Image (cartoon, rainbow, N blue to C red):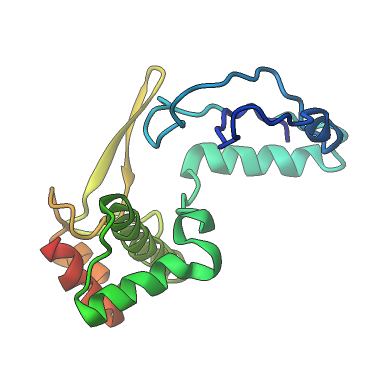
Length: 193
């Protein structure tokens, strides 16, 4: 697929970089600007992707899959970059819980908390899929209101532990607790943050 993506990188002033190297890797650089501040998380309002499919051998199969995606959605996991190289962020969370010593950096603290919440979210989602209840609304479920153009619908979501807000109840709460049973120390820790 083809996509457009803004990204920022640290590049020391005065050094020259051969942007043509990226062109050779199949990347087309549309704009290069220097800025005194890096692009921070949350500064982009959203990313949009347009996917173009060419030379399809099974057009009918692809159309069926696209219809299923439109109807049922797509399980949206947090990606591996959230957890650091070799899951180092999650190992750091374990160490923080074991020792009680928080990182000094407020930024690193936030990153580790975010990694922990994302990991627990992914576990809940994986458990729903394994138990074939990914699209089933359980009693006490927290639903996300979603909008796209003129359409409005409700989607299932999973808890981001320790952020407060509306919590599941009844069967949905029991399901979440079972899915995260072995992570009870993490849950207690995150709820205290």
